[in-house]
Image (cartoon, rainbow, N blue to C red):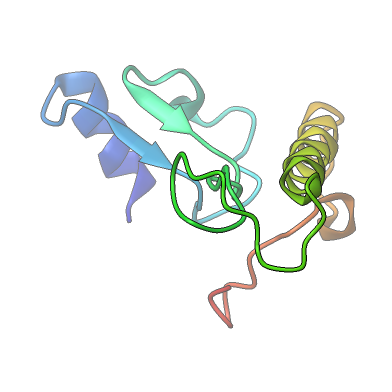
Length: 107
């Protein structure tokens, strides 16, 4: 995806909105125009809210403790906090970020 084209499309109303969690350059530079683009949602790589069973499910994998889902969600929040802190501190070091995508392996 070409982020410059996405920015133009959002600002001109060609498309009504967009949501992304992966970018050409990560973290997205602090001066990138998408940060304040209209109708744009940027999410971390933690779009899941449940361990198993899909959106809204209360299923926990067999043999798991009852609070496994809560621990998973807490870990996701901690990763987001760590990455936000690194962005706020202007870090360009990959080691400062959790769960970076390897663009050669595509995961």
